[in-house]
Image (cartoon, rainbow, N blue to C red; front, side, top):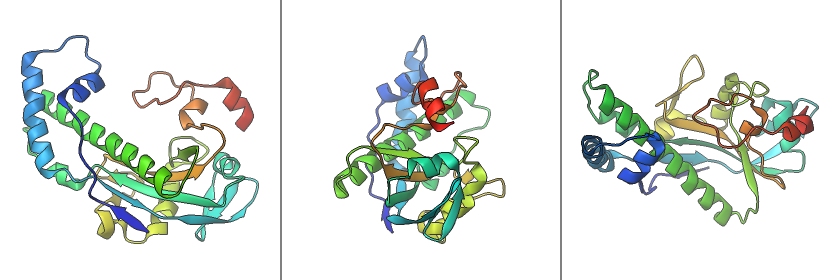
Length: 224
């Protein structure tokens, strides 16, 4: 098990504006973003907790990893030829919650949320590069509990239990409704693969801000 907590925060005002996908921008908005970025960079400390794990057993609709059973036919199919996998939890960091903004200032709250999301995405990208280099992985994909009906968010419990006391390790809690706190956190399993798999390929909901790949009827047929 390893913790990465010296992750650089390399996002810019332009990154934030691009992420917002606004048809128009203003000088006042750019000024607000710069102000918030200054505060964010003083406290931000994104973290990655991950582990090298091994598949112990498979059946038709589940897979056992480090003594934990995960019920997902799609996950089992993706891990059919894998032996070594990488469970992970990534967070933008609870430190960002120390930034105080009036709850009546909806614009700044909106901008800060976008910045936090970018910090999380940046940490994910950093981890992917780190993982592929350290373990000489070629093509790599991942799955997250809750991203597909086949692997529900309730499976977060098993994933967290692989690591032990996640709260103590990287200050991330799992709520009674299986949501991570702080909210700008993500968990899942990376695995080597010969195909570029993304859960979005199996999801037909088009109006989704987190979509990372186009819906693919071919992939749906493959996994049906």
